Length: 164
Image 1 (cartoon, rainbow, N blue to C red):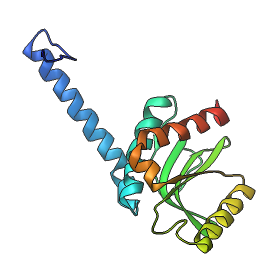
Image 2 (image 1 turned 180 degrees about the vertical axis):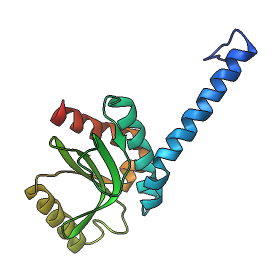
Image 3 (image 1 turned 120 degrees about the horizontal axis):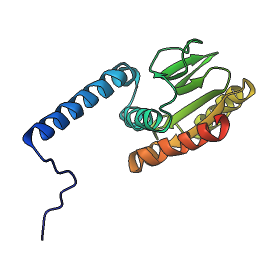
């Protein structure tokens, strides 16, 4: 069986320049999300954050995305973890001032839907966010583990439908 070649370079210099570019891109990507990942409280949240950050940067390059602790009006778009909103803390919030306020909840089995009371509290939170104008998307931990990119794409489609 022959080995597939996805990239070919005419010279060693081309290959070296490409390798440098990839290293810079990976370093920049990690630097941008490092603080975001530190605020994530579970492996499921970290997995979703990585998939979502890539989706935001690639799908909406016209928006200057920032990872922050809180939304700032002068930013075009923010994506942050553990957002304190009213009496609650959302796993993630994606905000485009004057255009979008979206909450994403990542539900691990340990803290969500384990009992009827936990499920009731989650629904109550969702309703509170919705009455304040937030769109709420909720993903089970098993969905995120199975297909983090698919979950991020669903969020991207929601953003696209509401904003563009």
